[in-house]
Length: 74
Image: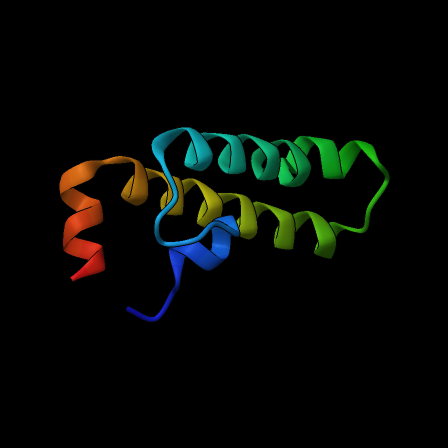
């Protein structure tokens, strides 16, 4: 894997479902593109936030599903 989803969410590999959810929600709120845009950030920053937001969502999607997580961990 080229992307370390645990690193994206800033959680240990032993993270529980609740820890994953908390980390996801915290990062999703911080990097939501609408929030970045409302802060008056440059268009480039908004594009970067969108990419990061999508990466955070994908990381949570994989790690929150037990079958995908076991495949990812192997």
